[in-house]
Structures are given as C-alpha cells and as structure tokens.
Length: 312
Image 1 (cartoon, helix red, strand yellow):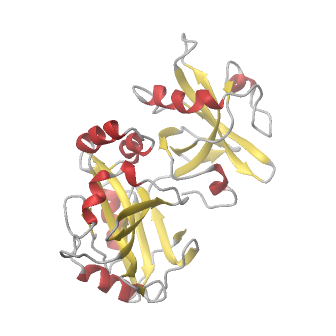
Image 2: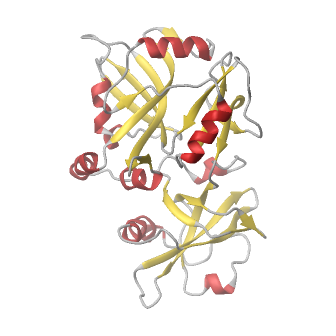
C-alpha cells in the first residue's frame, strides 16, 4: 500500500501520523521455516539483510507466523541516510554482506502487520492492525515499531528541524490495499527526491575510464525522455560501483527518445536503460533537473515501476 502526496496535514482523531523514513520498503514474511524479505517490486532480498533473521521466533519459543510491512534504514551521524543504505542494497556476495552489516547495521522499522498466524488483517482497519502490532512486543536493536502521533503539524515541524525526510498521515479506519496508492495514506516530504533511469555515463574530466556523471531520463509511453546530467554525489566508491552496473549494459546509440543536448551527449557512453537511481534536486526547469545530486541505486525499483507513477 502506497501513500499519495498530500497538500495539507489532516487533523482530528481519525488520523495518526508517522515519521517518513529514508529507507527501503520491505515486506517480512516470518514463520517457523524462516524469514523471507521482499522489496517493493517483489524481488526477494533476504540475503542482503542478515540482521533481520532473528525475527524468527522473537515473539516466543515457537513464534508467530507474521507478515510485516516496514522500512529498512541505516544511520549516518544519527539520521537515516538512503545513500548509506544504497551501499548495501546492490551487494550479493555473502562475505561482503556480512562486513557491511557489521559496518553499517540496518534497522527494520515496522509500521504495519498484514497477517498474524491464520488471521488476515488486511481487511481490518489500521486502528486494529496497530493494536495487534504493538501487542507483539517487537523491539530490538535490529527492528522496532516506531511511535505514531496525534498532532501531524507538530510532527511535520519536528521532522523538518531534525532534518528527517517528512511524515506520513494515515486514516485509522483505512483497510490495507496491497499495491494501491491510497488517499487514506498521505505523505509530506521536506526534500525533493525523485527516481530516474540511467541512459548513459560520462567519464571524469581528464580520464577516459573513471565515471564522472550519468545522464538520466523518465520512462514514458513515448520512450525515455531526457531529464539531465547528474554529477554531484558521484565520488569515492560510487563511481566504480556504478561502472560495474553500467558497463555490461553498453549499447551503440542513445536510448533517449528525444535529443540530448550536444554539451551533454559529447563523450557519453550509452547504456540500456535498466538502472534506477534516486536523485535530490531543486526541482525542474524546462524539463531538466536543477542542481541534481546522486543519492543511491534503487535495486528495489525497475524502470517500468516509474511509468505513470508519482515520483517518490
């Protein structure tokens, strides 16, 4: 279930408000046979988050059979950081996953429960789902059930001061609608973060091989439409990581349906548009991103997921 972008924080006792976490959405299917973690585009990512294996049996010797919804985050200087999380999202090697889990431990922030043993909770209101979730006592260094608040305006202001991503307001009577972008869940973000598809990359100035910037576009029914060049935020380990993802996707011609400006196209190595990244910017002007900054690869999204969808 997805949130719709809101215009005014709702008031009244029919709503609760949560912190909007800067992480990766995960469903956790927990039972006697183990745990299965699934991303928003239905990829199984269990191996990437070994810290969460301990959820099995956590509610008692036998444990419950649970289906949980939440956000996995990593912290950088005490705040959730998607760019820090992105260092782990694409890693599949077990030894490297273990090292990263120790260096950048993840926390699963659980905000909903969809199944308790054989009880399907999706048809029940959020107020009841929340009561069931809090009754389970799920609290540990690697998973928590965050608080909800009655005063949305206060929470929005507090998250702004603390430089968090924003808030989500949820109607207490709302049922859980898998895959739906619901008006009963409203999101209010402080930063303009959007997801785009890479269609090419440019080498650093003075180098023929080191990646210095990527060219991104928006998937539409008319093809991939060019939205700009992103160079900020690509340094250190980021460049080689992107190169490893993009080099196998090399193609001869531009994948963009429209003309790429000559200043951006010159020297660009074109790639098949498969890699999705998150970008922070000051919005757009004349169809181009203003002062874009790379934030991370979205292994949980495919280009098709961006078609006709509200940017997140």
